[in-house]
Length: 498
Image 1 (cartoon, rainbow, N blue to C red):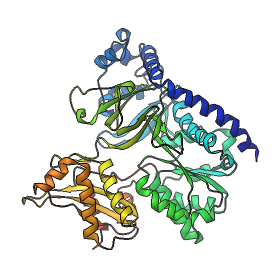
Image 2: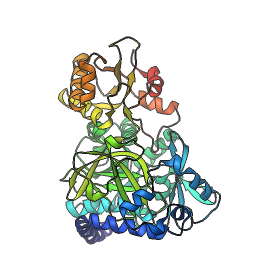
Image 3: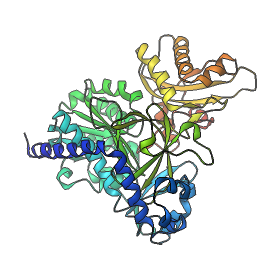
Image 4: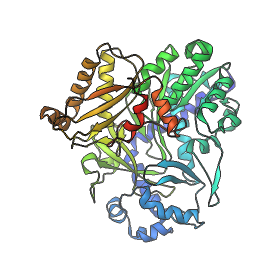
């Protein structure tokens, strides 16, 4: 056993035990977090405007702080960028995490000296829980890679600003620096395809033991490794044993990724965002991701049927139940208040609090009142694909609205590893499973308002070409599963199969 893996064992055991203790105090920890946030922020502009000096419990907090999106917090962010202190949180942010928004353009998410540990320790704790449970610490002695954005930071209002993955890259512990790939200069390359080629050059001869990133971009990395070496990834990297992923639902990519590896490796799923590191997979034996209940974030949950209402019902952690879709709302120690991050979650356990991400609140189809969400389309397609032994590379769904009665439908753009033998029968299966999951959709099809969904096959690498065409290839970008309009559908038309 080498030095790093030897030291990792006792550290992993200590951290894992502390996390298990925290499972028993999750609700209490959340209550204490809210008190800490309110007390600390009373001196801020936001705290004064929202009467934090008079807020003493969650009920009063709800009355004082409305649910907001970035656009509704933007004026405060602009004041911070102009150099003002004590706006949303005490002092000024340590960083701005820059991310793309569909309405607001570029978003600048504050990260404070108090909140940076949430981003760093979340990923660390996921790995340590895995080590403690499985006993696998050997990967700590090999080479590790995270397919991330550039660590180059600019200054916005005097505040270091960049992609979250680039910011976190600056906080990799010194003892892991020698293990980390790619080289800093390579990570700074902005063009994804140029960067990918360089990453492959640097890693193809190395002892890679852990690979981490967003699944579609890991798949591109694997494809290029296989193209250059002629070997499956698991043979090329015989000590590769851990894959860390997040950002999108892993299941649609799972079959092809493991096919590319050629053998099973352990997976660790995480739930990170620019706004915070919310949850992580703490065990290999139970479903769901453990909510990060004691790291400076107070969570709120809005039931799906309340989304969009002027005063939606808001629940604290102790009020949630399993099997219900909620919009996730956060309040954190960087100054995000009543902030709708745009993700929907569903608890699979409340003892401890483990959840799964079921989609985006803005990514749905309801052109006909059906309100189909990401969880439903992924379930329907993957169930049919598993039955027919079909691997899916990528997909997205959009409505097609016809002026002729009964001629409207959901159009599914799907890139297959290999197509089903009977596409019509495959489409029928997907449609049937979607009808079973969504009663509104079933009513529309039964009532001849909609016809059965139509699958439009996309040629190999069509989604990659589409993302390249809109300047969003690589990094943390991903294709939305659903759209309520035809923008993506129209953009994909030049890459469909004739």
